[in-house]
Amino acid sequence: MAETDPKSVQDLTNVVQTLLQQMQDKFQTMSDQIIGRNILTKHDTRIDDLEKNIADLMTQAGVEEIEGTPEKPKEGQGSS
Image (cartoon, rainbow, N blue to C red; front, side):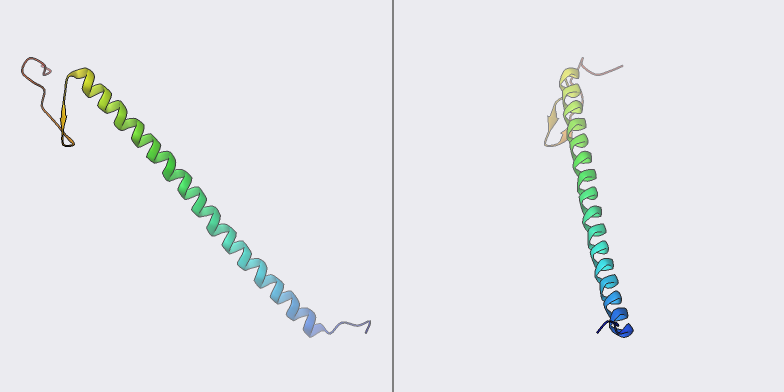
């Protein structure tokens, strides 16, 4: 039994290559999902910060927000 059957060696090689390719594909998919989530989380945080800064600026300017729609400045508080 010193010799190995070339057909079974080739079959084994093919199986291993297929498994490695499947693992690589799954790893790539998971990496893409993780990166996508991180990007979305960063964007969500930036959007939240931007909304807070806008709200702070509106408060400082004396502009009130009603039901998500900015209200026009009151008499004497508008810009010229």
